[in-house]
Length: 508
Image (cartoon, rainbow, N blue to C red):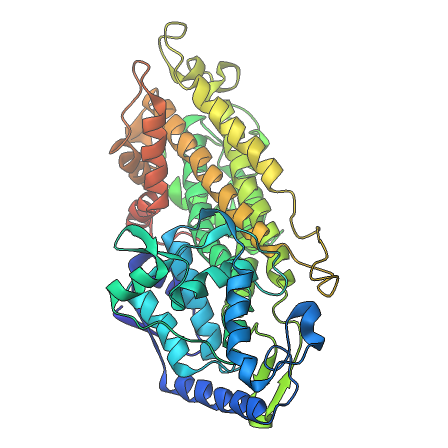
């Protein structure tokens, strides 16, 4: 993919990943250019006629009743950006900043914001030339848009603030000069157009939901490895069971498990060793499937949001009208990103319990903590501790942010979404869950080495081989965090899922 053309209507989550992680360039469509010009002409007319319109000829928030003269319009927009740049904390990762810039550009390209074309093109040029504003993680209420973090993005457009360029943090003006990009002088409506929206929370959430889709597939793979290590019963995955409770995610996970385990000589049928397995084996389709259904629902909502106009006021060029509404409010994203965090956390919950079954000799009929030299060596004892700690942390992080609200702007903005906090928490839960699953992959392959790797199913054998490329069998104790990091990297790069899908076809 050489270039992605944006028009405010057709951006996908996959497009966001291409731009954010693979540095694919961005350009406006001809239709978007015309919509932006038409919208701007209406704003210019409002200013010329001194029509009272929120944020164009008035102040902001509580100051919406203060009328601003035509001569003060430019100063108003600059003051908005510098006064709102109040973010705190670590800077967002580069991929998140790139996603933020892309989403804001796409929203502006929709043609309801009244920004000048050259100002929008400056933002896109920064993205293409990899000038990445230093945007602090914290400071957004997720209500009047992500005001504080988006202001830090705009600072660099003005030659202010800080940016990363060619791997170095430097003053925004210096970054723009080195990249050969002209800074802008904002005029009426433009500052508000650039910061009034949900693009920070949505950027974080879009990348997280994309990763969660792949992580859910990986969860089926790691669970299938554990099923074989514990001689699990496959009858519970029979399609007939799931057709009578036809949740799509549940049916898909059951189908995945049977495909992964096809040809296995380690699995059993009910009654051969025992009548039924514990829930974290027997109910894998129900647990993982529920998370998959949640993630797919969230993807639909995010796809709507990334192609929405979240500005205020909205400029309706055909009617030559401006309406002050509330599309900037993050509630639609706040709720689903809380839901996303819960859905991902449950993948870790079930994985950690499977790890416990692998390392506990009373449950596995294998050496304690998967080491043949117990006592002298601890094996996977503390790896399970770490998984348990991560799961416990996830439970704290999964507490919803969206049920909270703190009034702001002298009670003019008296309900806020906390959606950006929700998206950041979901991202943290994803990180933790990836490490829990990395530990399960390690523990399951270790347990399989006590049995017979050659007896694995068609799909699980591919996963086992991929994991063993970077993590060797544990014979004597060694520094485990190196192995955990290597296993987690395989998951993050989607190498295990890719290896399996080459053998058995696409997982659901």
